[in-house]
Length: 291
Image 1: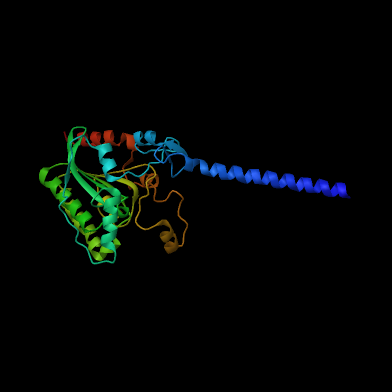
Image 2: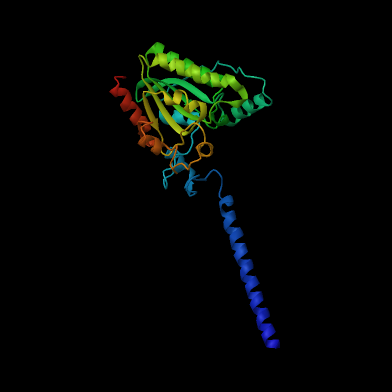
């Protein structure tokens, strides 16, 4: 009887020892990523694999394993796309917003965090030697929301393109109209659309839809281009998928509101990998006799 008790005690002890070793191993494995310097590797948000940060940046922030296109800041996009020597436009356009609580603090924080002064940056420069006017939205600045300054800058860029007879390229990346500015932000949809209606009588407008392009931006200038390009698997739509499903009481396809789904339905003209985008844009511009 005593021998049986001792054997059972030994088994329990062995089990507890093995369990403790397993827990220690798990704790060790979960701490490994934290021990790697933050400036050395990044983790793909889609496939979660680790990538050397330098390689990730050289590959235009595209995952080499799953081809996920990471989000770029507006300044990163300009560096990636434009020839050297472009100039920023309309930096003198100032805020004109409602007295929404803590809005000014959020704006100041966004400016500090992104080193940008608004959710869109406008420039004049060249792409492969071709003169262009380009506007780039920045999802890192209050989720690329469109307020009065954003709408005014885009409108002025469109009017400048019309006046100088230059092609216009807009990179969209937005959560929609900026709620802190209320109806003022919604006015920008009509203002930009009206300016585009005038410009498109004589000029070429190319929209490049990146992840995500939603809300009031998707319902205005993002959907009015002569040629519409999207990055792979970009989320493009107006209302969210869950909102639509609850409204129509139906289950939507898994790929709904992706660039690939919209290409199939004829909403966009082409999907371009980021590494090919500059070449594709310059080819389109030359085909339309811009030099």
